[in-house]
Length: 455
Ligand SMILES: Nc1nc2c(ncn2[C@@H]2O[C@H](COP(=O)(O)OP(=O)(O)OP(=O)(O)O)[C@@H](O)[C@H]2O)c(=O)[nH]1
Ligand SMILES: [Mg+2]
Image (cartoon, rainbow, N blue to C red):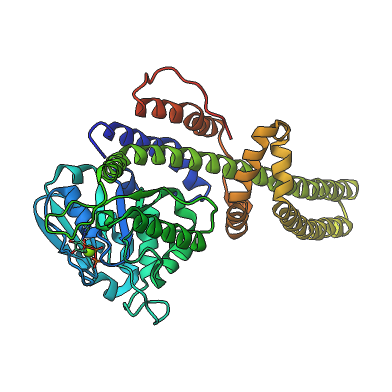
């Protein structure tokens, strides 16, 4: 995070710690995101065909030759570029360092780790953004792992999920899609297209507008074939100024402008990242609020069933024992009848307890089998407001499975009730703290609060 955004990251962290996580823990709702993720700089992932100019672009961006470049497939490693004294650490070391947000990468195995490194340089841009250079994509006939010895697509997915921006590079030679590009589009980037930007690079090589149009058309055509959504992502047509590069004849002003826009977008990722973190906090708090309320209502219902079942047993036991006591009082000389009555009362209580247990079991299964009904009952009034209702139903659809599983695995009686104070604090996060954070991000005053649309 940049120094200006650090207070926002701290505030988000505090809200998780004080208002959200305690409820999450009590109601067994997993936390998102990890603590280290909030404060660290955002990542920009650079992927694309081999020799499409990824590393050259990164060097240009950083103003230094840090990454090796060349026409043949040059670099088959994932390189995370971060701020620090000049240095380099290998994959094994960075994936086992708990202070770095790369810990989860260990599970891709030793071959992958031998293709991972982290380079640090004291370059100002790296203070605010981490760049990830990746091995060029290739056409392979060897199936899933492209002969790389590790799951390339899954590794790209890992980075893409955590990145704020994913740049996909193509060059005029390969405006189509290689096997790996296709695979990455289909499995790694499918639902992440909102952060994807396509870069048609090396446009300085074109000799005529016609060549440019042909390559651009081919790229769009090929993208449209592999992308699930109808509208194409934003395509930057640009080039990296390289002294000894082969040059075409097109005027380059517009392409320079496109590169500046791309650089601007990269520089703005910290701001976007703060925005994403605020949205994640708001969504997480809304989901948790709904989950905790449903669990709380289920706990209330099951406890009521239990109270009522055992209440009847207690009452019947009381009457039976009172009857036995009266029998004893009526004939204190010969207690045999009274003893029989006491034994009868005891048997009745035992049987009653068994029946009550079964009733609680059945009742609990009924409550948990109809969580949708519980939801409708709990939010009946909110569901009448139409626009709001859709949001709420959508939220419920997202968490329903998880809430049901949690209740089933841990049992409704293992949960506490949701305290009024706890819930109010959670709602305040959504209705007041989140809008206040957004105003701070936009540089507005922090005091006034307008509740966000509550879910
Ligand atoms: N004309 C021109 N040449 C470029 C441009 N960008 C890169 N090159 C050249 O293209 C070649 C490949 O560039 P790299 O930056 O190594 O490409 P890469 O995508 O990192 O390649 P791999 O790491 O092998 O996947 C180098 O010889 C660069 O000098 C560009 O915008 N225009
Ligand atoms: Mg490279």
